[in-house]
Amino acid sequence: MADQTQDGKLQVRLVTPDRELVDTAADAVELPGRTGYLEVLYGAAPLLTELGTGLVTIHGGGEGNDRYYVAWGFAEVLPNRVTILAESAEKPEQIDASAAQREYERGQKMWDQAREDPAQYERANELMHDAQARMDAKGGNQ
Image (cartoon, rainbow, N blue to C red; front, side, top):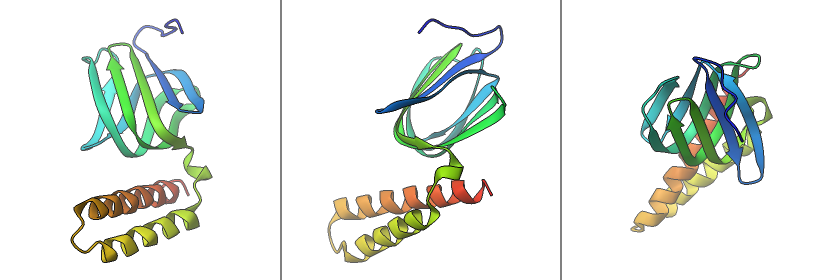
């Protein structure tokens, strides 16, 4: 798609394997990187980063701030464009808090049963982290 950015605006695109959720001009975008959040402004240095789980906040997009919960993937930052490729993404109001709670409990059970298996500990941590981030995103939306 051709760049349609205005001066001083980022073109922000958020896609998952099955759909495009956003393609808009924005003032800034906040991303949950694997090691913490980062904010991207127009003119940023090029960067490729791994996504963690959390909220993507698009500032000054179509109707003000727009938020999406994302889990895992990558983001490509260019001076005038940010492309977010997420394994999954949804609006916070679409999150099923009870399903996230069940997933957290499943992760706790895996953790308790991991014994000496580091891979199972890592998978349990990912499940609990993702579920907690989903519950936090849902709670921050109410």
